[in-house]
Length: 255
Figure 1: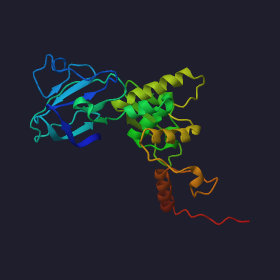
Figure 2: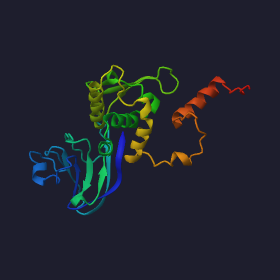
Figure 3: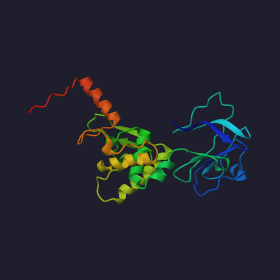
Figure 4: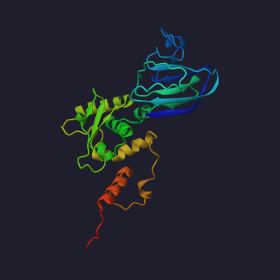
């Protein structure tokens, strides 16, 4: 579960919206609630939701949770309204009245920051799997099943993450589909789906552009010894753990 919005938002005229059409000026009141009997959430406009609060103007507690399946009903909820929502673009945004403030709900930063479908898919996969770059580079076009919405990752040496099939959340499927289409257009049977071995630098740069990773100091200012192997933090910690379990100790080099 992701929670892109949690805390307080400001409402005017009891209104706040979820929008996914970058060319739209926002939903219309009558069109949003056309054919509905509930007044909490208007969902009749494609790609938009009109949300109504009990408070006319002021700050209200608000959270947006993105789940892969419907949550169980909580007895503490006073009112529950279930509606269907299909974004009309790769990203959705929570928007205050008159556009006074907005919150990105997940995928738009990837869509706006990435020009290469393979890198965008790699970053999306890293977000919902937590896999390392080395494991993302093991995937091919056959490892993504669009019908089942699953992505298979491999670890042939079984040293870090292990092989596993991960469910692909709805917001990430557009990136995986684009990467699969790109792989089919490139000649050769050994095309990477998410990342090729030489894509590491580009992928790290993309994470900074999409504000998913803090900007890093220039390579010239780092204290690492030249020529050393770069490890992901997670892999480094796991390597240390396995070495400790196996009692592996480095032997001094002989001249």
